[in-house]
Length: 204
Length: 204
DNA sequence: TTAGTATTTAAACAAATGTTTTAATCATTT
DNA sequence: AAATGATTAAAACATTTGTTTAAATACTAA
Image (cartoon, rainbow over all chains, first blue to last red):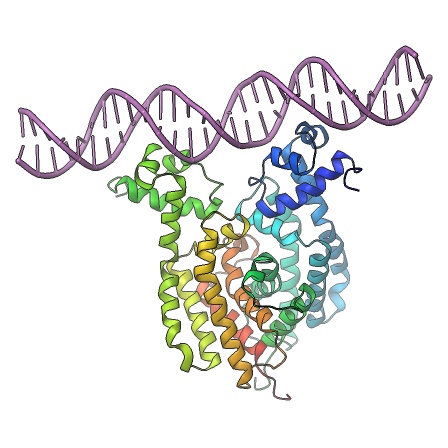
């Protein structure tokens, strides 16, 4: 039960939700403590303050990214399309394992904390390089359209794959009765659209 | 010169930049006043408080949206592809006229202010409906792949067109020396990728 | 110049922020 | 049972927040 968990665990879980929803500056330590049914002092006691709690949350959120990146080492022998598919697959996995992940990314983008540079340098730029590498290879191999702007094409892929998770659950407000909709289905279709879009056309 | 502008104008311009960068809660009235070279009390004096200033900034930012939406009335007789192209064109226009526009949208998404519902209901949902309408028509006419999930395809388009502007100027940090890169060029390529991606394939 | 209005200024306000302190309570070990 | 350490609790702290006040200054019209 929730009441049996120790204060440290309760704080970490509650903070994950609240920080994701409102960003680091959008939540107060009193809100965090109250939501976790814990005294305010527990935050400093277990995490050395609000920033320490936020850092603990971030580290937990980024764990699957590190796992995914370690697999890219062996991607050299894969075709460009297979590499992009690998990215798409891992995007789906990460979003399933950490539904709030994108929220943290974009909270940091619009309101950077001291951890932003750390995270960014460490993970995001590596992902971006993986995509641009795959695109470059794909063009060289004649798989993708030769006139693609690599950087823009990479951002297009990141955009079409991640935007959905940024505006969720917001999008549900607009979309009329899409009962079957789920994240996995989205990523599959979005990736298919993108891949068909960058393919070298037959008359080229 | 900047010193000649009246306090009201200076505040509005400075607030536009700062609110876009840090969000509503990320900036204090003292920061706003100092950046505008204006006394703190001027904010309440001219805008009836911080929220009033923010509202004035938002209204100014959304002006081009209203203009674009008014043109969609006559879009019924256009083909589905032409309608989507119309969306893509207006996206480029809006981002050129209001480079910070997307920042405000996504600040509101991650940290909604009381104005969020107003904005959202009024503009964003209308845009979304326009896109889904075009997609539905395109499928019916045989222009687009029949197995598209309309809502997901609409979000894919919004994602591929707008993501670039969210992560800018962040992306510049990663991208190695792309000298020719500009927003207009991005939108053209992103839209082309998307359009090729949703087209009905020849063997269908 | 004078009178009246508009604007600017510095100071003060209550409320909220993150952190720390000190004591009380709990659990475990001797 | 007593003692030790871990955890919880309430209160106080110095800052910072947005707003308001009241006086000083600048501007405009008669």
